[in-house]
Image 1: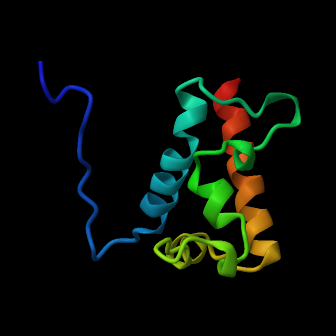
Image 2: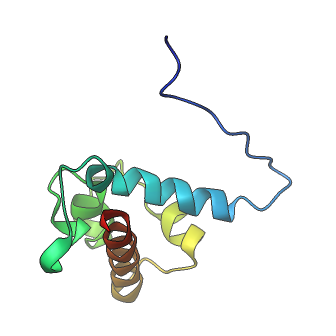
Length: 103
């Protein structure tokens, strides 16, 4: 039956979208871990997954990112700045979430 794998969730604009946006960002970046094609066990990091927007975008200096990749919204959603500390916070957050998904 078509449509069983996919669903949509209504996000009301007058409500607090930050929780939804945070979970959506985590979901997208943790898909390789959830699918079992990448692991963060033994000290690995989601930043090491080569086809991730984390590795080639969010974790690098803004001047090193592809010009089309907009990262400001993600950093803003979590309350981080797009600086070394904010990028480290993002990677640590995703690594912690990935490790908890693998248990």
